[in-house]
Image (cartoon, rainbow, N blue to C red):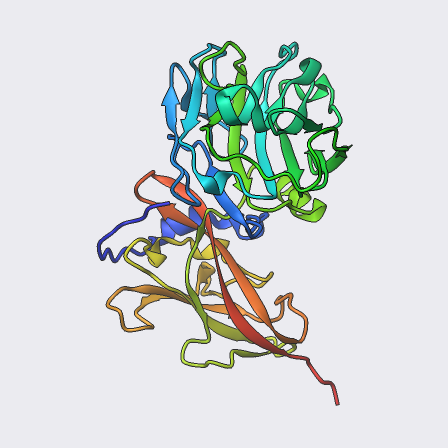
Amino acid sequence: MTYLRKTVRVFLAPILILAFAGLAAAQTCEVPPPGMVAWWPGDGNANDIAGTNHGALNGDATASVQGQVGQAFNFPGGALDYVRVPNHASLEPAAVTVDAWVRGNAPIGSSRYIVAKGASGGTAASYAFYTSGGGLAFYIFNGSGYELSPNAGDGVWDGNWHHIAGTYDAEVVRLYVDGGEIGTGTATTIGIGYSLPTDNDLIIGQYTGTISLPFKGEVDEVEVFGRALKLGEISGIYAAGDIGKCKLKVNIDIKPGNSLNTINQGSAGVIPVAILSSLTFTATNVDPLTIDLNGATVKLIGKKGLPFCNPKDVNGDGLDDLYCQVYTYDFLVEPGATNAVLKAKAYDPNTSLWVWVYGEDSVNIVPNIVP
């Protein structure tokens, strides 16, 4: 995600803030699990917002239809309708997770490829989601042997959005649909500890992009992780629904000027929190009413209930940060030293969209001791 690359001091007008007041108590974004190496959200282009593995739209493929989270890729079903991502070693680690949101209508057809990373010679995929028998499966292939997940069946192609995830941990292949595990696959001739090849491009919506195995439907939020995600992490992505994952990590400072960040859990007071601006992010574009700091929200003041937030350069870098007072009584953190996570919605002037951002800072929670 790219934000303004110059100093822009903009603070949301009250009328604009109030328009988003209903978001304050709404569900927040899911912090991306660690280990992500690529993320193609399909929001108007085929760019990778987690790394530099940018793709290119081909044929009649687009990234402008309404998706599960923002916009999505649409594949009309032609052989040349796909997204091609140039080969890179980061896309084929020793262990891998591939996940996405998909939507299609049965009959979807057999052996249609949704996401595939080609193997040596382009004769097979080292990992792929494909419509096995018209259903859905995930597999690893090494040119001679393969490991295949159980088939999820064609119920996934009911015209609704479904979250799919496939993992490989050098021992087994697992398939997940809508946050639940479909099952595991056992190795055939692939062998335990197989390392994925790194010589072909990754294709979304097709197999190699040159043969007639195209997927017809929509694909959103395609991601590759360099590890096998756990069930809880996958179910968390699914549970986030149309809000999705937080799309930008920003810097925050809890209790600016105080390195201990001590918080009395039962104080029923407020603590200052600053969301910091940078050359690529304007903190004053954050909607204060969407701020969630481990369950705690911004203090509201006055008869109109305006958020207690102001533009303020707290770190002396010449950029206005967003300085807020946040209630402590809803702070959902166990006593002790830990990290607190702030989530909020910010306006991206480059895309004219509101996106979820997040930041982390250490805190020391002191339990409330009643005499």
